[in-house]
Image 1 (spheres, rainbow over the protein chains, first blue to last red):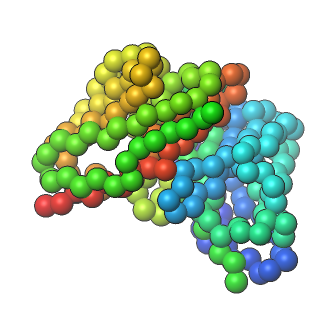
Image 2: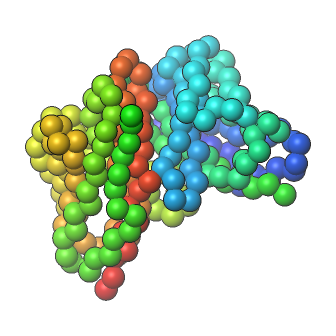
Length: 113
Length: 111
């Protein structure tokens, strides 16, 4: 089956800790994205990558980092610099180019202890 | 600036028709997406409009007016399983595929 997987489904972070969220796709998509979803707000773009070994900051990149070493994988690290990390994190992928449909993974809910 | 507006909540009756409106303002607009999202789950793609007019897909239709910065999603023969949040997203233009999302419209279908 082709699709996008995210793990874990739930993640707990202690104060001052970095955590990494996994995102893998086997759709052969060049572009991948990370969004954050908070209650009452639309999805906000954290980082995106149009091709392997390249990525760009989105609208709310502060306190986050990413890497894109493989086409299939786009992990997101939530660093201790992110002061309000509690949210639902969604990864998406698409073919490259404007107007291509983005397909979403099941999401990771991050909670701060 | 870039902005998308859609109603926060709507209620409709099973078997009825409901229209969810979306107005947008973006630079370099390419097209308008609609996604469905059930609580705690991933958004799933419903439709994409590039040209003005109505696109019909079974019980769901989507309309776009580029000159008015306006779109709507029309759901017919509502079913209980249609209770979900409906997200409007505008393509921001340029060579990238960045989207700007509305806050979503939570639709409650009642018996």
